[in-house]
Length: 270
Image 1 (cartoon, rainbow, N blue to C red):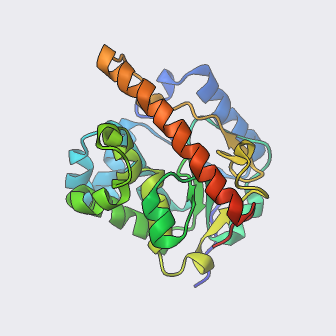
Image 2 (cartoon, rainbow, N blue to C red; image 1 turned 45 degrees about the vertical axis):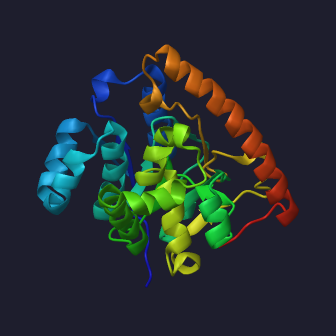
């Protein structure tokens, strides 16, 4: 099946354009200047609600029952790209060139980083993840539908999610919950289990996946600054402590995984 990504860029910010930071406004100007012939769509909470009511009412109950707000915005980005086609970009993604060269691929995702999930490494021999901070696809692309289906499955079947997080210490699992239910962990798992991944999905791999300077890029087209606004908020003493020891654990684990991945070599493919 042949797909082509339409010339369209989608941005989402729940509070509306009036609440955007200067950096986010700069990201909008950046993408529009570099892609002047692309249609531009911006969704705030009102437009998101109108969109789901009109086009995906069958998912409304799931959408309303996500327990973490960012899950709704994750889920919505998949619905929007599935319906309209085009490129979704986080508002902390800055481009250095037009996206036109990617249109013929049909479905494009960025390599994000090497994974710490034993599930991906052991079950599928996949030591890396793709990101959901920037991606593009043709309307109704089956891989985007597979992501949507898995978001619903993760919401309804906690045991399915537990398989992905079984190597994460229980004290830290809450911090990975969003990543594995609507975020890049889930998207990467969907790719690993998707039967036609090599044919239907283009992953923008760097020359060396083990070089951390190549992580969190949209291929050669842009960079994700990892603003992580969904994580922000006041922390109590216990939360600060958990964050501290999680950081120590994560650093040690990542060093071990980097060594294991370096033995495979610098390049990856589907």
